[in-house]
Image 1 (cartoon, helix red, strand yellow):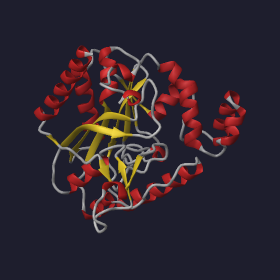
Image 2 (cartoon, rainbow, N blue to C red):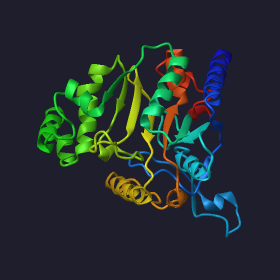
Image 3 (cartoon, rainbow, N blue to C red):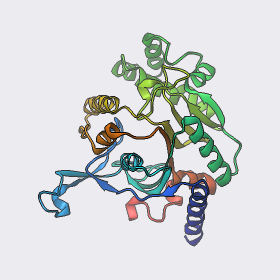
Length: 316
């Protein structure tokens, strides 16, 4: 136990030193907020406003333990914070597996007046300083599918994708009929991940339909400035050239709620203090969310997140 705690403390110091030396300021966003990122597949932990015992004129009906510090950090950017980073707990309901814990530690940072390429470089530098691994291969999402599955994921007719998934599971294919991104997720799992499981990859330029909070890419208008870093089959980082259009964020929130309802999830508030901040003006920026526990898993060469957590949720 002592060595486990020591390894975590050393990594935290390394990460802080990296960003302090680069001129970033460490911030502590609230863990509890009335706003939350509206994701189609991530469920926040909810807290009733009455549980906080606040005066009626201060309390919101509902609060969320944050699944990401993103909304709060972008509000700080709008207030002139400059480059910032956060190292702190985030929460996602229902997530417990060898790779997941309901509460985990997120490293998130934002640089200003830069694009996705700048934060990709920062990510690769950080990984090089903390992990003894081969440099990741950088490839586009389209290039990954073309190389390992033999088709363009954006241009390929839906019918072809449906037939490929039907060869794996006809009932699944029928349920996903017409849903390109969901079909591609299945094909990523079945066709591509087994072929690249032992590789270190940085996948960039995801389809616009998978943009999350990334802005459209200048070099390929059918894609977004979004990347993921995967090391030995384990996703550890997700980064964006950040969306600055408040109306587009609102539209994406509405669409994600539509997907949530379709899968039996509760909708989340689509309007937020972030949208107000974006209307007031956020500087051009790019950001990255990196799972610190997963980085430590790779450093300690374990495949179970419980091996690097002080106390996982079942004994917390």
